[in-house]
Length: 130
Image 1 (cartoon, helix red, strand yellow):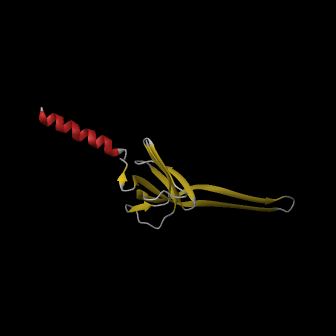
Image 2 (tube, rainbow, N blue to C red):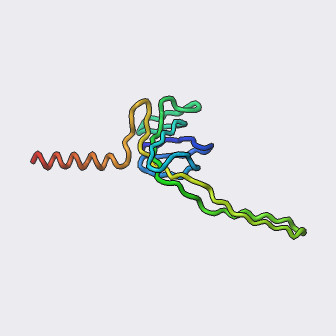
């Protein structure tokens, strides 16, 4: 299982190829590709690359799926004995990223969709030979 820990917008995420994650709003249009270069750790099978603080030559390639808003959080402030009450709501602006690949020194980790496609191609080759 391949995964990486990346930092974006002051937060750290454990990301895997083929999965999507909600991060703080990014100024990128939907369906565009973005490269996350603040990679703190890369785990690829048996090898682990730990950065100090960043892993050199490591990037995570992601596609922006959509922009959305998070769940509403209610903020309620009250001062006792003063008849002061204040109720506010907040919805965080988010961007949904689909992780395409994790690159470490030019080599790319396979995404979740690629092994299935490779098996299908291999099956077609076996059928055509028979």
